[in-house]
Length: 255
Image 1 (cartoon, rainbow, N blue to C red):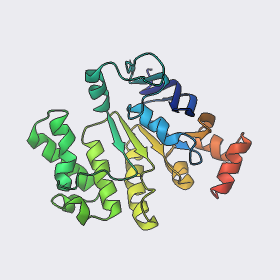
Image 2 (image 1 turned 180 degrees about the vertical axis):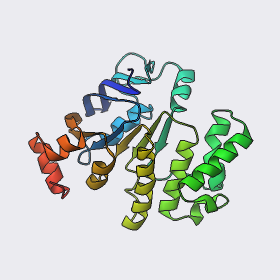
Image 3 (image 1 turned 45 degrees about the vertical axis):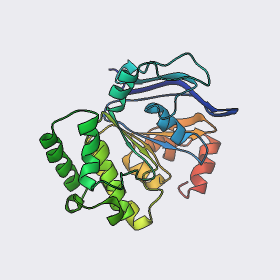
Image 4 (image 1 turned 30 degrees about the vertical axis):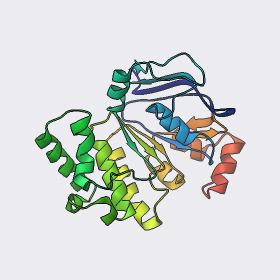
């Protein structure tokens, strides 16, 4: 069965700094893959390489068996086919640390924007789906509010609804709760857990080890731009092989 996501020997450099040093990883349909590791280990960069917000200096990325066409390897590497890139990005829902909502649009307009503009779908159909998703993430009553009128947790749940409204094959979460205080963090994590329970394919960068244990099918520990260890929750947290991972989990308070 073709993996829904395949990364092969992905490297990424910013000038002289090599952040990713050859990462190979795959996810099956319905997998929740969590990337953990200390700050600077390359987690967010790896996530951003999946939808080409960062273009790998070397290596390949394939979504559902379709490899993204890239120019020859090197610092000036870029996607070769803008039509293909648009199509692939329309299959990836991204949720950032900062909510990145349009401040001049209502929450409902934010959620409807990409399906209307990028996917050219019918307004009535998109509106119905957007309202259903806002209900689903628990902010159906905020459809006509503007982002500034919402708490951080509500804004992040709106961002999740926006990402879901394009009907993505894969959801990408980049530390979705790092900008929130603990009470608001809990409401966002509840929504992500609900999506995991529905069998959605998700790649998640998080600093929350307890949450990683709860939702993951596979946990990947990145250290200095490489995969130091990967496996099931039981393998990574319960039968840790690497000293570096043991150290990391100890520091995180989850040894």
